[in-house]
Image 1 (cartoon, chains in turn purple, yellow):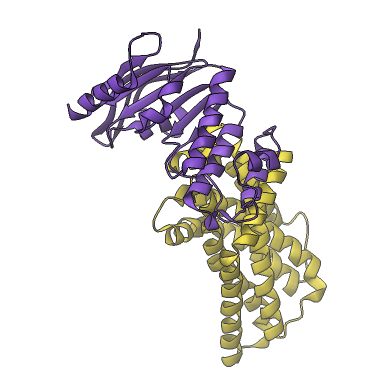
Image 2 (image 1 turned 180 degrees about the vertical axis):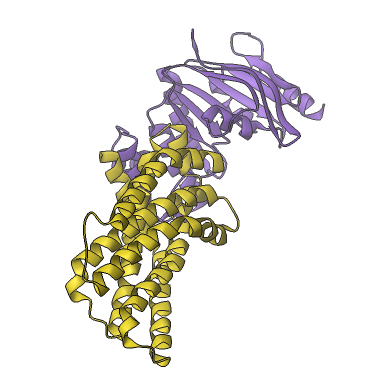
Length: 226
Length: 227
């Protein structure tokens, strides 16, 4: 399937009679960094869950490349609260055959001191760092992230940006990210979409020159108001 | 096999770090058993039927406390969405099921053992000479009960009333297991008979295979549809 990891065609999602997503079309290209913006409650997280395979669409198609390997991080930490940081990493590393060593991951995400604490004893930011450590350590070529910088302090954001920068440099993995903080991720973005009630609109493509962050922000604001 | 090992280690660690459900299960088994033994002794029933009473009440306590214990077995996976890792990565969910069955079975067998020992001691019923066969029967009952309850716990894991719903769904389906277990035990204790070819033993083995095979094939489907 050419250069796409995922092709989404005419995707609808509804719960009962309530339509959440209508006629979404999107191609997730290999090695590209794509961002989805949109108002609260418009269905961005639901869309990401469908792409991750956690929900099934009502109609439409999600066509996946045969080599697709997805790593997904939503709003939940996806951690075992009663296990320690180290035990969480040991389990995930062993079960999913992650090549990185546990101590390397702890060091990289500045969690060595908290290694023997249970998740319940961590701050939300520390737990988020651990979730991100697991997310990026997974052998994958598509990383789906839902507001990854929520709860992160300055250090955590810095670590996240470094990880995204490395991913971008390697050009092997695709990223689809949902955020409300466009300025944090603008430098990585190849394409930016706006998810509204009428579907997905492409509002920025890196190949089209002449778009600045302020212009995109202005356009985003107008779309939100409309 | 290595993945299953990682899952079992994780489930045992979860049980060790948060043993409140296991403790509740064992404590309830202990308290109910003591109460029952006290009740039986107070009514001065015919001592000849004491062995039967031990088996019947051990089974009743086992059904009640076991379902409470197993109903929480998926909580760690669903609480913060850790189950998502398995679904997104299309991992073999039957391994997750097998791990839960094994760990749940250990907890159940422990509860069954406690009830059995306490009732035997308090009612002065000596069953020592039947012990190896009784352990075998108890193990088979525990495995099939654990296999069935673990499967059904995936179906009810997102219900607000799971602790109530699971025993209700479970009850009609576990009767054959316990009938077979009790018939075998009665025969063993009262008639001193046990045969590998006994139809009740065949039924118990068949139910073990049936529930484990059903669980392996349906657990993933149940999880995905209830998440």
